[in-house]
Image (cartoon, rainbow, N blue to C red):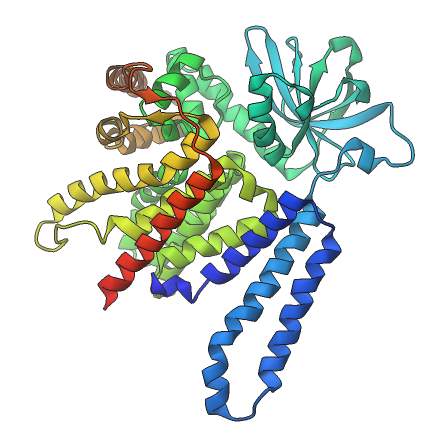
Length: 494
């Protein structure tokens, strides 16, 4: 653990602290200048406090203080400047009758559409609207009356009170009902994000028009393209009750499998003596994939860590996974401070940290003596520690603790790399105009088999505890894991 205690951990933690303080208190950006300037002043003081090299070396530990102050102030400023404004704040002098919005997501249901829009001129404020089938798609620009927007805290029902903080953490400040007669089209967005989303939609169309079963195509759209809008509620609940809902989200697990598959596909380059070019090409392809799939926080985090690992190979340097994780968090929070309050980002970071801190030290099998047993035991330990780290956050955000997580993950996770690899090859062939029916049948059978396994293992709600862990309990749990992980790794290096 020591390799990143002196690396990116301190600035990343300080930046997150500044963002959290600013986000919870709603302070103005200029208040963040106080610790930032204090950090700079303290740094200058340390530089000029002594000309004696020995004394200056002894004071080196105090440099962590100005780093903490500097990045805490930077986090406060970053969050305040990136904070979405309400319509009242964005238009203080004259409240508009209509506003222009960009559609960022459309979820089609049997009763209509659930549309997520970003309100122009509000620094990223979003609204979640319900409507009848609208025909809208991601990237459409629409003009809607402001009277349809209702504050998310206006819903006083039990469910409304529960989801309001989660919606606000995602930048969604309003809900409402959008009627067709109140909708005016205003063209298409020209942003790169929209262009990549159009490419993803074209790939989804090819998958849906293939000979795959409807349920299989929707499953592929979820695990390959990050689009879970087509999944039915039964499938979501089946995986959630078994503690394997992470399979349905495009996460680091999926990106790691795809990275390994890319290196395998690009292996002919290695035989030509240009193995570094294969890793460089893999980096470019992975980032293109992340852009196409919507740049979720978990996939960006995984891609940054994979990029660091491949760059270390290219330049023949040692890669520290813990330092890479902290650096990835630092980069994500700099460009998107709101990610700190996103449940997906928190789960991704906590699970990966648990794997880094506990998976290898707790493995009693020697890698050189029994490599097969080492990987089997490592898989079991990784499943347990990742679930132990995710459990408090899962309980806090979703009020559920699945008890069948261990057998379900042990059975399902070994099947995922094979299934995902075949699915990637199948989709690539679809994109170039080829469809191999036997591969499609394999994917249909594989999906049905995994769903059947999950139904048998999860047993519905019989092994799910409905309990919401309080925030202080989450803090105590994760703090205890962090201290234990640091102690365990320090003890090992002595």
